[in-house]
Image 1 (spheres, rainbow, N blue to C red):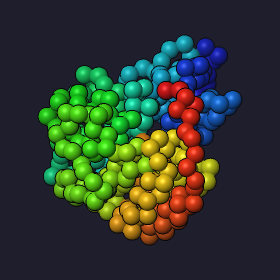
Image 2: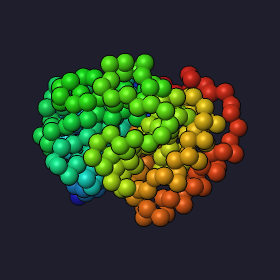
Image 3: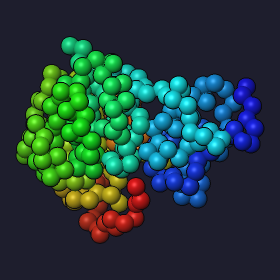
Length: 294
C-alpha cells in the first residue's frame, strides 16, 4: 500500500475544464465535485496509481498533479493498448480535449483516428508501434493537428466535405452520406448531426470510432447523444442514425468524448436501433456555444 504525505498527494488543479477524461481512466479515484473533476481518494495500490498516471498524461490541461509537480515522463503509459486499438492519450486543448486512437491493421500498419496534442516527441513515439498510413478525422472539432501528424507520418489525411474548412488540404475528402471503404477493412459512414461533416469510422465489424456523434453514458448505462453540443442539427443526427444503425456492426464503441464500451455486437445493434428512435423524438433547440470552456 502506498503512503501519501500532504505535499505528495494526487490532486486536480483549477485549470480543469470538466472534460471527463480523468473520470474515464480512474473512475474509482476521480469524480465530479462542484462542476469539475477531483481526486476523491488517494491510490492504495500500484495498479490504482497507474490509473492516475494515465489520467494525468491524458488530461488536456495538465491539471492532474502529483504534489506540486506534474507526473514524471517515465510513468507515461501511452499509447495504451485496449485491443487491436491503442488509446493515444495526451489529449489536445485544441481538439476540445478529445480522445484519439491508433488502430492496427492486419498488414502491420496503423491508422490514427483523430489526433492527440502535437509534439515532435509524440510524433516519434506513436510510429514505434508500426507505420501510420492514414489519419482519419471524425469532424472539425478534432482537426487541429491532423496535417502536422499526417505530414510527419507520410500518411493520408481524411475528412468529410461538410467539415473541409477545418482541413482544407486533406488528401482524402469524403462526400455525401453513403458509406465508403477507405482502407483495408475500414469504412467511413458520414453521420451529419454533431457537425455537418461528422463521420463514423467502422473497422472489421468490431471497432466503432464515433467521434462526438454518440458515446457510452455511465449515467444512463446506455449509448447516448450529446444533445447540448449537437452544433449542426439534432434532426439531421436522428436521420443519420436511422440510416446508419442497420448498416453497422461492432463490439467496441470508441468515442471522442464519453466512455468507451465493449459489448456483444447483437447488443450494440439493439441499442443503436433504440438510440435512433430516441434521437428522432428530440426537438431542435438553441445550442449555447459559450456553455463549455475548453
